[in-house]
Image 1: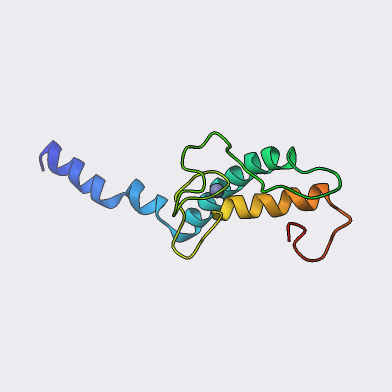
Image 2: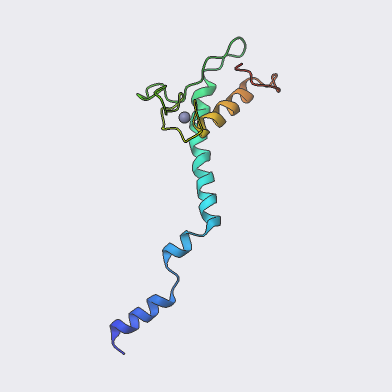
Length: 114
Ligand SMILES: [Zn+2]
């Protein structure tokens, strides 16, 4: 057996990095972590825009985004929207909800932006 054949047989016996990293469990954990980070910075920005009382403005995560309010883009951060979403992307929607709940603890029911 040549050295190359030996190396090939060892390589074939090992699980490849691709197979290991593509297990469904690890993938979902990773995407949850990514979403958590995506939401966290939006909550910080939005929370600063919520007055302790009175009307609440439309919360924006990234005011300098050039794509804000363009069709098919998130009105809060300017990211392209997934199909079926009209105003905000998923992280912005969750961040707005979290920020409102933090600041307006006394308004537990309904959507305070209505
Ligand atoms: Zn967004």
